[in-house]
Length: 435
Image (tube, rainbow, N blue to C red; front, side, top):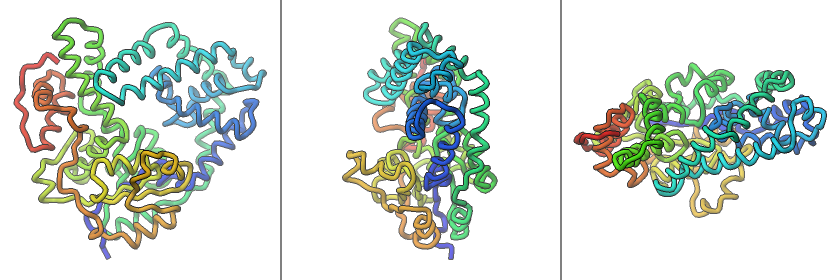
């Protein structure tokens, strides 16, 4: 029976398709950390390793490797040793001293805090955080010392050899084979896709490990792709120059460009706006939704009425896979499936702001998920999307801002403004704009 005909079934990748139980991750980390004596117990080393990975965005802001994406990156391991190692022999070998470690820790915490502030609150508060973030991460002796320290430590043979071992250790761990489930979804008439965080080069390796890279093909939609709109780099460079310009015209241009810069931030994370971009790409992108996502292809209102979209989102993290979709579509459109297993199994219970809500379906293990998607769920149980999902947060873009964006000499701003207008079925009349 093809009783999922026309249904898009989206899977998160990390901890959902790949290692839903979390067993392989924990085994990999334990074996990996055991290769170098940090002077910590096994539990202390694992805790320190996970804490180091949370500092990944700050390391990336310094131009270093992000261990959130690449778990065995030498920059992450260097940071782990600098911040957490208690083995005096190892610290001496790497040239690590307590004062340098303290300074690095303070800087990374400050950068992470500012990085979060850029994505919250009013536009004015966000902009001040962005200015402080750029000043802290790109200029000054503190940033230079941090970059030099991490890079220097990462080049020692013990770190290089350690980093090289991660891939082999990880590939040697058994993971649940997701192919029977995704193939069963396809047999029932559904279209399996991936919607996930991360970088394509890294996520492709994970799909190759699962034997699914060819199966999904152009149906892998990532935050990196959503944020990489056409000509986004010239736009970001122009925005950075605006931060240092002066005068009333420059301030007006900066205020306008900042709205669009914040939109790239929203599209580059698992936000409601990111999921909206994915839904438009799936609706309008035919057999190549990843390219549609990259090109900011959207569907106008009439197209959604004529071809409603039935959508299922499957993920292990309530805060990043489930709640944003419910915020976007409401509680009764589409279906969200929370795989409450593995390392984030109890996240929903710990986050009190979600207590009054819940996903449409909750499953506790892969077998239960396989029964739900392989046998139980039917297309007629899924209320379709008939209204264009908004690809920009509410009230961020008034008509005047869209018109000025559509008139910009910067391709990225024009592309974003025109896509936003099309999702509402409106045309924007380009006004002269210096931004």
